[in-house]
Amino acid sequence: MSLRSSLRDLSENKTVLYALIAIVVTRAISGALLAPIQDEAYYFYWARFLDWGYFDHPPLVAWISSLIQVFPSNVLAARAGTILLSVLSIPLMISLFKTSGLREKESLGTALILASGSLAGILLGYITTPDIPLIFCWIAALHECAKALKDDPKRWLSAGLFTGLGIIGKYTMVLIGPVFLITLLFHPRKLKNPWPFLGGLVCVLVLLPHILWLKDNQWITTRFQFGRGLMSQYGIDMKLGSDLPLAQGSLDSSKEAKLAHFFILPEDEKPLSKPKAKGFKKAIQSFGDYLGSQLALWGLLLVPLIYSLFKKNLRKKAEWTSPAHQALITSAAIAPVLIFGLLSPFQHVEANWPAMYCIAAAAVFAQYVIIPKRLMLIALGINLALSLIVSFHTVYPLPFTKPHKDRLLKETHGYKDFAGLLAELPPAPIFADTYQNVGELMFYQPNLKIQQWPGIARTSEAARRPEMSYWQWKDVEAEGGFFLVMDNFVPPYIPGAEIDSLTEILDCPNGQLALSKSNPLGLYQRPCEGRIHRWNLAYYLLKSKAE
Image (cartoon, rainbow, N blue to C red; front, side, top):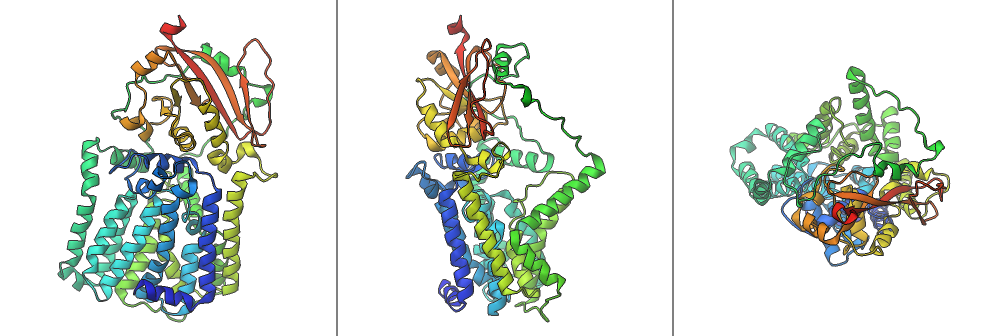
């Protein structure tokens, strides 16, 4: 099925066409309104240094964000690749669903709205993460496999191509391997021709540059991802991009602690935390959280789906093109959820890790369940409205929320003003504690040369890559002092340096930054309540200068 025929099918179903246009427009508006979330800004920072790999992930997420090199600090340009891939996925899904057996206008429209209009489908249509190239390539690889099963076995080559591209988008693309294997077992004659195996060879050839990069860079990405995904280990031994001394925790009696405690008020005492579940109880709780997160990916579309199942609005017969096509779509819907579900009692699983299951699951639901169109469109409208409200909220915070507890505001708010403030500081090296702060501040002020100081938070590409390490210790010595941006309450001890001053910077709900300098002999009055961010800006002198 060609792109032209896919668009023709859409033009014949006005309701679905208008729904998809609304989805695309909502993604574009939300993408323009929403400031970069922390991990997004980090990936946009990578895009300034295009390569075949990075510490946290393979490279495709940086490549699709590379327009930021032409339009720095422009969030829509940075997200352009994400929005484009989400649009291109629509005709691919039409062709995939029809090739697999969804030829009726009603069932095809249901599958498209479920896949594109779920909460995950909307958000991942403009928020840039490694899941974006993964999901696009997942759809494309399934599409090429479906075509190969039908009447064109050479399409296994392009299935291998998209599988390889998907893996250099995100390693979880390897889960399509079991999907292909199950599919071929339902069509064993296909194993007797060379095309599936040649497709595997194409996949390996696509991966080769990334594999060579890994070999030259201590296999850091695979080591980090396996440690994180299977053992919750975020730190690995590796060569850093600078020779800066590792930061150390400050003593309670240190100057760093005394300066920080100036900002404590009596009401700041934290309540006692509840004891965490352990053993079997923790495993059950983790599995329950996992199931809840996967259901939440559908947003309000879950309501008409559950309603239809409760009312037993089922189709009399599913129309699959062949048993192999049924196996392809069904296993693509089940495998990611099942594999991560088996892992979830023992390891925290992020909601987005198996998100690609939603594509095939939408087709499975459409094959077996009749969902009332009006109810489905209402649910879609609410999902779209939620996306717009959330994006609007990050620009103009809603009055009934609690800013200091708002995760979304913490991910997006205040960084532009904070970066502007840092740009006005006296000339000196500027460092930050986390890769999130580095990414956000460098997005808004690309010329600041902010660098992650090692040893404060988990390591990252910002600490590993030499091109992101603008300052070596000799450079810091030559400058005589440096600034350190922190979320941490108490500044760290830096060997060879001594803290000179500490300034608290509050990101207030009214959009203003409030600055207070530590003065242990004075009295602290908090300039605003309900702050969104609380940053510390420390200035350190080299001990030779301090003396």
